[in-house]
Length: 240
Image (cartoon, rainbow, N blue to C red; front, side, top):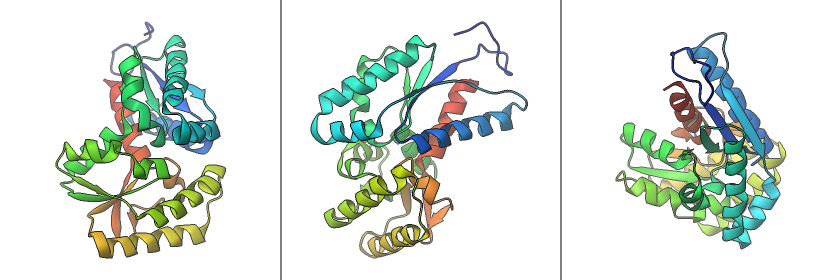
């Protein structure tokens, strides 16, 4: 940590972002960090370091080699620490598949995007939430396990819908292809699933989703923007 002081008088912390997962989401993180910091401390900017990874490689490892994914993400965290980062955040929900393994081996604190979402859902007194994101995120246990600790339930689309949603996510959103028709299709999916599950809110559990779904509701139900909640916790940590 440098000798430079923040507007609060405390030593400035540097945030390290494991980025590139995908690139547009990482850019969104950086923009939100700058905007949020400027609102708190006008005329200043946070210290940030970004280590950009290959999103396609991450998806391959998530599908076929989780130990290699741990090593890939941990190496990024270590590079960020070597560059002076005091705390690290991974700009991808899918990569939290291996968050616990990475955090256990890292020697710098990490900020967990799932815990940020769970804390906000608990604050809002929500009980059942629909999770949308890449297939790996929807099919893994890391969201349900953390939410269950707060007494909440996670529901996900059935398999056919997960495959369809993942296709739109990877082949459109990750490539920066944001279509009005896709937004309408996602809203219709939410309406259909609500008739079955009766959830309270929708978690935008992929960090590209807020780039397409910018409203505070989706098909009439409130959304939890994982990126926004993650960034808010990053800012609290940096300003502490």
